[in-house]
Length: 151
Image (tube, rainbow, N blue to C red):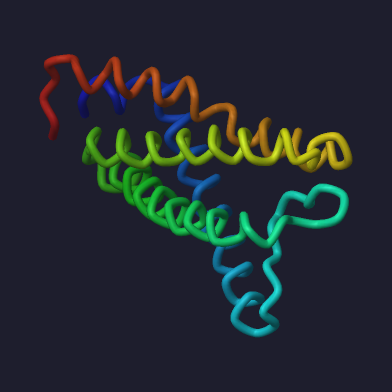
């Protein structure tokens, strides 16, 4: 196995990311199902007082679509490394870039809307759950630039 597979922290973070994205994909699928059945948009994190502005809903749907891509690629990346023992750094970089970009945009949209002030625990849980992807992104970028043989 290559250096990436031998690094326990790296493997732990990749495994965590795969599980996190599997859960994320499940919740996105659940939200899509509810949307199709009821026409209501159920976001995991609570809305600001007065609900979400209808003008931002198409934007949030676009972010959800990007999250589906990031989650699918993240599951593929983690299962490739941990189960198939095949390191696919480009897939991981693409998935993590989408996930981090989406998180930053979501933060930039929900914080000024006042959602965090009225629902701090739900947002804190999201931040804590996704925070390990920052060191994973850094480690992956460092390792992807190293000259290592991929099995």
